[in-house]
Image (cartoon, rainbow, N blue to C red; front, side):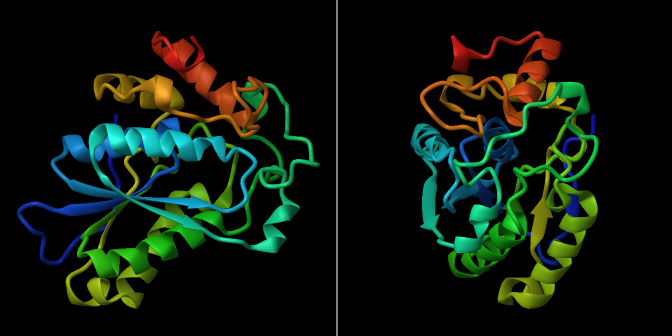
Length: 237
């Protein structure tokens, strides 16, 4: 099981590295945070609100960051055109298709235009001010909805740009890690279980609300991952 992908390595690594974790409070990003802490990284987190209908995830991010005692950075951005997708526009229906067909076909309506490009750019800017060395994100190219900004090629290109366009990048080098890139959702659940991730605090549902909808891509992929891993999802009782 390949756990980490170093898209760009540091030129002058420290004895103890500091990581900035892109953190939504979902299963994947929480697993990344716990993985980073287990690897010995000192961690800060960056959580972004951008008008997502599942802003309930922000509460999870706050609770988990407090639980592990890491410094958090919260940022709210307002981009009116993001209302074109069903993840930010509550008047649009979320896709509801069989889980085995989720990766097939066209890019779904839940794709938020350029979201991960925005997040990585913001992370690079913040990294330049907090003396971090590493950006850690939780994209997955195995059990995912087919978003173009969750692929290895995208992250390799973004890592190259960060190393060419930031002070830290050109002077010391930035390490960009996507620990979950090549893992199935089942493998992610198993890794999270080994790391003692508090599943009950995480939030994955695209619909928001008080309880997971069980119908969106994220709910279905998560449910299949827990079922195949034989692990109880304590977030749903």
